[in-house]
Length: 67
Image (cartoon, rainbow, N blue to C red; front, top):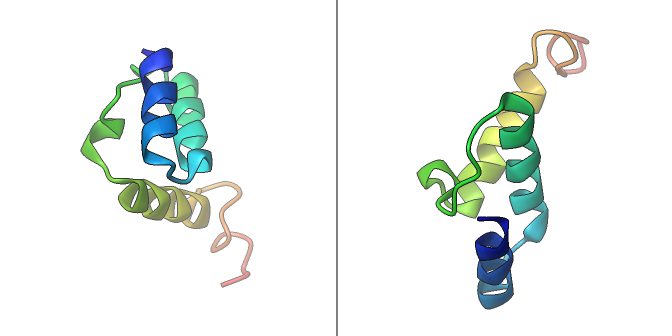
């Protein structure tokens, strides 16, 4: 499955950082690493990860009073 993602990256030349973040998130949550990124586009995945960072109940920006 990882080789398919690498092939997809090479063919689309999109922001590979989002794919790396997706793989890390799936690994940490014990989820499957699928080629469809849970049905999200790279922009949607980026937005959901920003929301996760902002709203983290322990280390989020809102918790620390920075927003």
